[in-house]
Image (cartoon, rainbow, N blue to C red; front, side, top):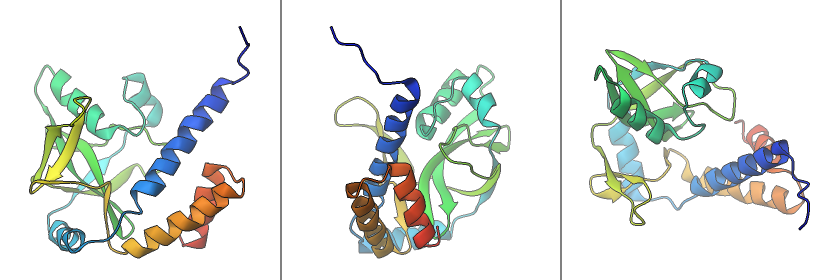
Length: 192
């Protein structure tokens, strides 16, 4: 039997690296007319202001980092008073709209998801009643659809920029840079 030398911080870093690489890849999909039209349609929808409770409070009640859809579904399902409503929509991040879930609890809007990066405690969110959830083909989760079409991670105003950012990011990874450092360098080069 061999002794493992991987520490918890190394395992966490590996999970974070994998998360970052996956997100970079998922944001670099090919542009389409559907994406451009859907972006315009969603931008015309009303917005709400969402509050993000402190991360330690979210972790204490069992919310999982970067798993917003499951966190909000669990909150709604476990709310014995039935005041919580899981709402899917779009987090406004620069010129992109990121698929996200929040909860409406008695008219107050909350993000229940701890993040891997520091984010503002309040943000603008676009609820989208056209998003529906279907069981995934492997039966292991749920997938988001809009108008019968599976949704990507985001709707992007400048999709070609994400493709170029991915290429630069992957070149930095190939040169030996850690995913966190490569992400930060690419963000600095592209003005975040």
